[in-house]
Amino acid sequence: MPRFHFDIHEGSRLIADEDGQNLANLGVARKEAMLTGASIAREAFLVGSTDHVVVDVREDEHATCLKISITLEVEELADG
Image (cartoon, rainbow, N blue to C red; front, side, top):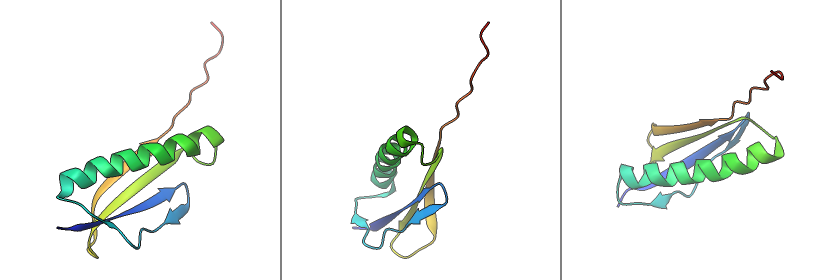
């Protein structure tokens, strides 16, 4: 079973995943990356620590094979 690592970029901060997780395939890793990214982004966006979260997925010690990017964009509109 392949081992996937999920490196988190929260704004300019990097949280490297040294341990990883054994998952069946890249499709399962994609779902895990989306769930992880959404959870981290939700918290970061609410506290205002960043407006951009990226999850880089690596299989074993190889280069990044998947990247999930979540960006918050807020546009304040003038009253009509």
